Image (cartoon, rainbow over all chains, first blue to last red; front, top):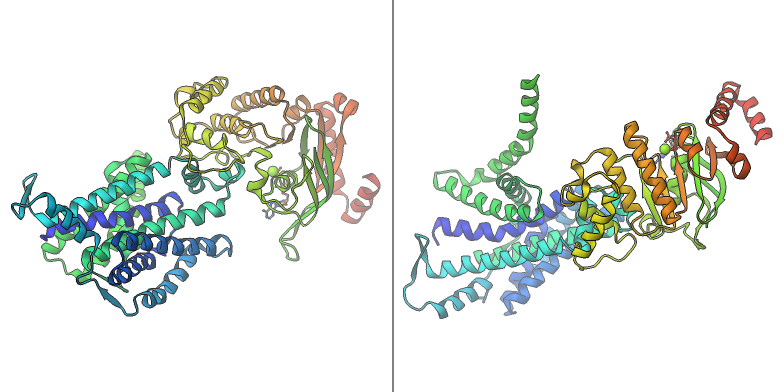
Length: 308
Length: 270
Ligand SMILES: Nc1ncnc2c1ncn2[C@@H]1O[C@H](COP(=O)(O)OP(=O)(O)OP(=O)(O)O)[C@@H](O)[C@H]1O
Ligand SMILES: [Mg+2]
């Protein structure tokens, strides 16, 4: 795959991570660092099952469920045992490191010839287009296989995000959003706030693990280190997305998180192409998130001074 | 209806910050009655309402509502029976969500929340109808975020939300104290309308002696975590703002005595 195509595919796959981070950080205002363990957990569960020859769809769903359990654990630590949110996440993330090693049996599981969702997408694609191996998509020269992998990712992410949008418009989903917005109010209206937080973190980490499962299949391996830095990457995508849509509406914010993830990956790809040392990537992303978080306040302060 | 038996609540027990916010309080009210609680700052009025609402569990005593012992029920479970409006206009609504979404949440107070669609046309029409009665022009702004409304508008909506499904008991904790006089009057007027229309059972805290005298059918005065006066029936009908003020003055004079003498006096007095 060429650099742009792979950045696009990665951005799509990691947009599920961004959606998960959006749920915990933005909807619940919960700084959930479980992410770094649950994305690996999703990848690990999925990879191990694929190697055993289990159908990719089942393996992928299993990854989602695993992440959900991890998120629920963080939620229970926070709500039932009254631990600080950040600490709950750190504990579960740390524990997951060992869990992931146990699941994989070693630190890296290559998928080699295992049947995966991308390979299925390529197979299906090959049935439809038999002629040339290079496609021209909106003036973008594409390898045929890449086209179908990106297309399948796009379809998958679209379906998941539409489902997510509908979920957040149901009675349960609306109560969840209200929990993050004003727990006192929703408790007075009879919702179990603890339950909402546990369920919300399960959903968030489920999506993140789903992202991990797809990532493992896309890159062809699961690695115990692959979660490092993922919270900040997810946050960066969410922040870019918010800047892109500039709105409070649920549908736009979900779309924004996806666009943010893709744009973020494209920016990274371009920066690497320009000679950015890959080792500096996490440092620069952290600086970017830092700047994005403080700049709005700084600007507002400046403007207030200017008004005076 | 509501029956409170010997409840006590001490915050930060056995520490220097120990506060005995409720001391062996007993009190009961009948269905359809409208009780007003007044009292000095820190006398335990909010704590009393919070004890009923389940914000915390009481240390001792029992609370029965509609023949159900709710003493150990968590707050969200009590919400099936209780509607609530807080002092702070920010407390009762979810600011980033729309007026419609907030009301829809209230329309399921205490009911299970599943995967059913949150907003439907019937509900929206119903909302428009009920919001129109507020005369605030909000019926055309159902999709606006509640955070963009004024405190008075938010309290009016919170009141509508708390009473959307008729509650067994409505708790109002100084729900107009944070508003400007005009909005406060508006919200009090609205409270009065809703309470009489639905014949609600109400426990309301207020700092306004005017409200205490004009509203409700019983006045309770709290002091230092205890019920000091309970004005009902003819006595309640006769009471004027000045009478209430003189009772506060009485407390103030007593506070000036030395603590031992005050305690003795209080024992004899109560
Ligand atoms: N959650 C809490 N933790 C610790 N102390 C509390 C808590 N809630 C109330 N108190 C204390 O209990 C006492 C009674 O407080 P409460 O809020 O019930 O008074 P109030 O009568 O409502 O006063 P106000 O008129 O100022 O609203 C006060 O001394 C208060 O500081
Ligand atoms: Mg109070």
